[in-house]
Length: 164
Image 1 (cartoon, rainbow, N blue to C red):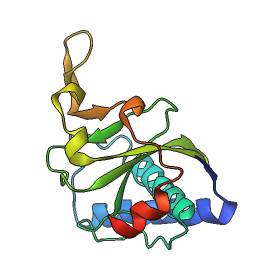
Image 2: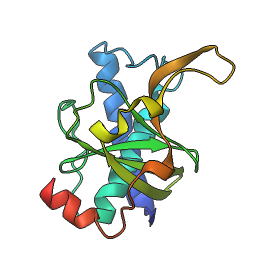
Image 3: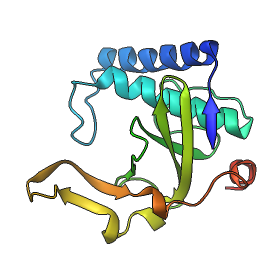
């Protein structure tokens, strides 16, 4: 499902991402999961763009949840993003099994919602990666769910938002 954001929507998401990063700096929060500091700003802006994409597609208001790290990203949904069109949905051991995660890919306001999966279904050994193909340690061990394992979203997004 392709979603194109307007210039104003891109600005809203980008500024919310900037505010998240400034808040992290002020509160001395460290990046999670071995992400490092080299792309903090990008991660927050990209994440906010993805969240706004899901909210727009579901026709619900997006709050940005600034400072509310314990809250879902959009209504009852969690959103994970990748700039790669073949990106994978990343899950971690601490993600709540009952939560539904949506993968959004894209850049610069043109994004595709690739599908969804409940965390428990995605946190299976088949998806775990702690080494790269050359057997070197993976910089970010986690569950990497390929798009082929995600459920299609088009017909189900409004129901998922209401009834999760």
